[in-house]
Image (cartoon, rainbow, N blue to C red; front, top):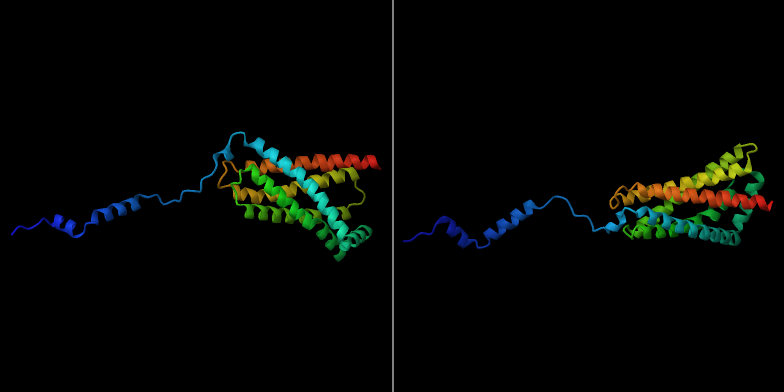
Length: 230
């Protein structure tokens, strides 16, 4: 009686054995990391800073207009704002009415303004970041930084005796834009670290653009206009 070799017998009994071994070997050879989602490499182009500066200037321009419009509308429709600001100016002290007035006057318009600006900034990044988290974190961080700096400025104004109005106003504008843009850019940088080479370039350009333009236009420009109207 002819007997088959052991290996041949096992192969006939398990026709998929070799295939299973090959699959197992391939699985063992696969890398242990995950391949990231495809990113448009143009986001890391050498001249990307030009695009970033341009979109941040556009965002700044539209933000100024939307903030003025929103503040004007809130001042018109809110009786609390008018009474609260009047009490704050007369007494120069913190009170419930004054805090409510500042919160209503600046809070809602500022939230929407930062949201619109962040959408424009996202276009500079070729929409490579999630829109919901990008807009929400930018708006919330900017709003928090804004109320922090406003509170500090109000306290410092009340503690000073008689500062130079022009220098004081210019310093207030510079500090406000610097702190708000830094707060927003920090949270944006956290999202950009996974897709950008040298992601710290983004907050550097955004902070410089917003602080520089804010100081020149809102600070120096408006200061000159106000002084000429006196």
